Length: 263
Length: 224
Image (tube, rainbow over all chains, first blue to last red; front, side, top):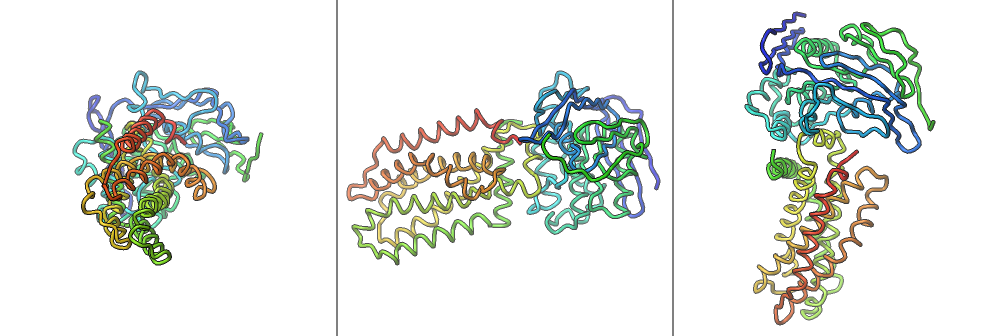
């Protein structure tokens, strides 16, 4: 794996993160504006009688790379969707350091989400999917950007094929491409390695590392502890609470399966 | 991005997907064809009976066809959680609903344009003399159906038993459209081809009121 990051440009210029993994190349550009963080302050989320998050206070600074661990049902997805402004907290507050004074639409513009599902239309081609979201975000030079992002995720040759014909791994690549097309400053990944083979996972890790080096804030929810090796901080959630928050590699934490009822 | 432009982007996506899959139009076209054919064969109405029952039959056929179609409009967005992607875009939430309302209106309007001549032939009622005014009435009612149906489809999409819930919610709310539409159509197909202004006003008023309510509540309607 070779990796190169070009930096040293002024604010508003473009950083290029280039990562090479056997069989794939990733060359993803993101705007080098100051990054966007996310801060949860005593956040709670209830779904009926289920308390999905319980007084979570967590501050992720702009430019950080955080891995979010925890058993099923520990609240990782809810936390990410809250950071993406998709879910309102039942109590507490969510803020985006670096986005102070911006309208909600402008904060949203700078957030990218790769979810459990792909967030793309199976009936549209890879290119049409990205073009649709590029138009919604009012991106300039969209065609150029689409071609570049599709090449970077290894789908350049399948740009004209409908997403419904893609394998699970290819859909995941398209999902990542969709999140990257808008050049977000805060990237939220929910189990991004799902469906990727070994080569794809290497590519993903290199891409995440490259994006982080280029200045983006990354929050990755995962069960795969290898991500803690490339992220600067590991947060463990358990039963909707922060169980541990450590710099560097994840400390071993209990990960027995957990299915929660009402509390 | 302006509301019109972002709604246009959503509309063009809806049209592109429908042109590619034809899921909604095939379902609706087949349903309306069945209703037109089966009622005609079952009752074999005379010309006078046709003039009396056709307005109600046409509106009910299009209402039920619309209900079938509108159920899928937000379910499609749930398959891959694309509604989340739409909600994350820096656009007015009303643009998402407006794009879908316009798409549903286009699909239903096309169905009406295709099937009014079929109804005319099956029930031996000449619509040639009133075609312009008839489609004005149909389109005003259809827009109301598209507005309310899209909103309720968004609300019902996350509910259990949504297939049952949507018609139960939709049809009572649409009663004013049904009454005004049937009355206006009956007047047009009658011997004097009259279109009473009050029914047009009622249809137009319904559209304006519900579109305004949709605009005001759009933030809540597309929320998770």
